[in-house]
Length: 103
Figure 1 (tube, rainbow, N blue to C red):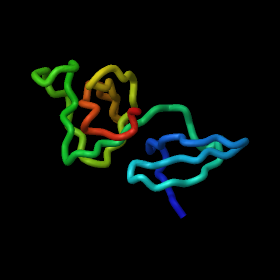
Figure 2 (figure 1 turned 45 degrees about the vertical axis):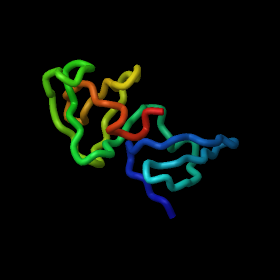
Figure 3 (figure 1 turned 135 degrees about the horizontal axis):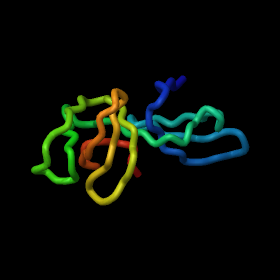
Figure 4 (figure 1 turned 90 degrees about the horizontal axis):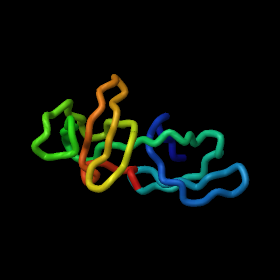
């Protein structure tokens, strides 16, 4: 049985009535009740450490670092940078190549 932590990002593959087939960051597939899949977008850090920056630029001031496995709320997606929020409140931009769940 696949157990996914609350808030973890999943990719919705199929919806049949009250059930949703999802894929989690590790590639495993599962069925979930549609009511249990919330629309709030989240992503998970896939690199050892992702630097979240004040602006969408490599030379922008770092706001915080997120370690592999940290879940961030996705606020906006455009191009190679994502605007994100940490559970403790700080917001910034992370490279799309350093996370999973943005597509």
